[in-house]
Image (cartoon, rainbow over all chains, first blue to last red; front, side, top):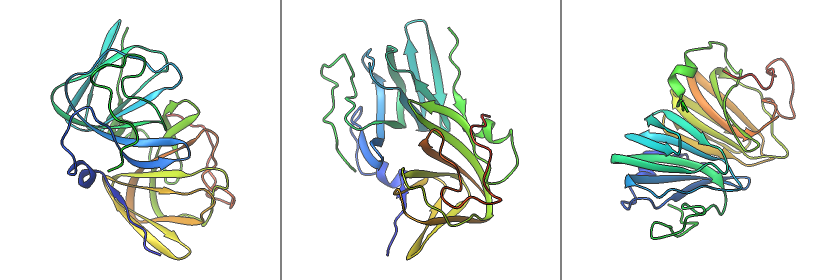
Length: 121
Length: 121
């Protein structure tokens, strides 16, 4: 049988839009998603799940109500469930998210930046 | 509050032994583990979970009973639950695993390469 690796850079080359997660893999009921981000996202939280941010390229900030964290390529952070956060990036930044299937990107906030869910690349 | 990123290279610099996963993060009931590998692992499977392999540095092979996949840095593969596999690396290779808390590295096989579980770095 033929087994093919999932190449992150190759997947990133296949889309351009910001804040619109693309699924690249599923493990049990969890999904690995690639996202290109630039500018400010909305304040939101996910009431029923932690959320993993792993920076592939660029610099990502995650603002919290009482502080912030800045992630470079090769760095990750886990936002605990229920914690309000606002991702942002001054320049375009490539990230990988890991979260349960069905999580909506804007969590409890909704609004214009809510992306269509379950798009594979 | 002070928020600290998890830096993958910095975590990798803190241990040397092969085939001995170190936990760097937990998301819900899943864990992110770093492993340094070299040589052949044992044939095994995990009957109740998929397993994610993400190569950080080097080249990782995963042999299956009917084929194999070779992963470079920036590539990932998900071994479905129950599928027999044997990871191997000719030269030292750094990988990240994602799997549910409590998964034993040698799965159903056991043996000398079975690592102590739940070691954080």
